[in-house]
Image: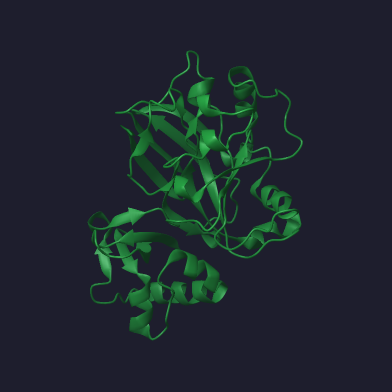
Length: 301
């Protein structure tokens, strides 16, 4: 399933939908029509577990849409799949070999490969949905940078899980951009650099894990103003998705709805020669294979 959060009108509340062809199917209405109640929001749906997924998949397969509950995707406003995460996003730094090398040269990080995942966090207020503007505050940063990433959404509580068991705890996958103000690092700490409002565009959907049996076989790319900056494959991660879940869960309980931004490949602005930064008027478009694409304008804040 390809699940979205959306608003049918400006005034309406966020709803849970499923993308079927070019339609957004209201999952709450679909469940009501069939007498099989379904949660109305993404987090509630994730919390409901495998039973809700099975019921939703069966109802969607019938293609018997509720009256007024199947709208063209062009007529709705897509939100971030999880518009307000319950906790900070778990960010992973230096998780592609080529990005380790460019960061060592441009950002004074160690040239040695990390022996353990490098973990930081992005607050819930960083999250914005598809098409929302990325803010550029020139009073705070003049080195705004881009990083496209595979986002991993947890579906089952993970505490001290093994690598072999880790993917069982995944709900699905999304696209995420880790926006970074490179000149806002403080004494080696990254949260102010990466945690400012609007610095985590996310979407356009969550694809449930049954449709992506191996998250390490996905092409990933990003363009700025139509020029390709990043292109790689998730097979090149140093620490694979199952390793990240197993590692974090040894000391931090991962809960349903938690999000891991799994790292970015080479091609960030800081790593180019000469370096390039985002400015108002620039446009980012990016994507991850089998999930979808994001497109965002950078605007003065």
